Image 1 (cartoon, rainbow, N blue to C red):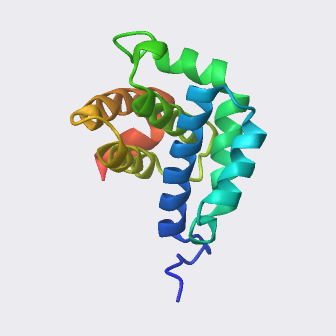
Image 2: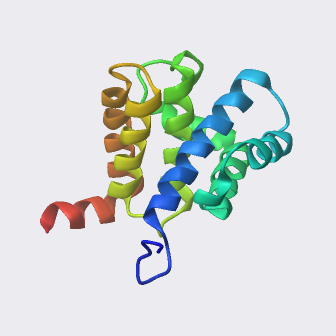
Length: 153
């Protein structure tokens, strides 16, 4: 039995989609393989039945399509260039930036929490603290009204 919300979204499948998107974007960053080919490989090799495939593809294609704008927007919150950020943390930040800027249907707290948990699982030992700091500042800037409302409640 699926654990879906009233809107039909399965949060566990979304979490798995984010993890698969991280792995796909990491592979893309490291290999410079065409994004379509990376998605195709993940469909063939990964157990995508347990992930929200539509969301996975939206994240991966969305990051690739908006890469320059996402990196430019993130630059204001980084203490180094995006290319100097660890590849795992870089992919997590790009996914979260895409969600924060292009997926207003996903609450910013969910985006940040998912990014932190994904980084804890795949990133460097303290990478999640860096990701958290960057995304806290980004969310305050990009989703100011939502962040202020959350602080008031």
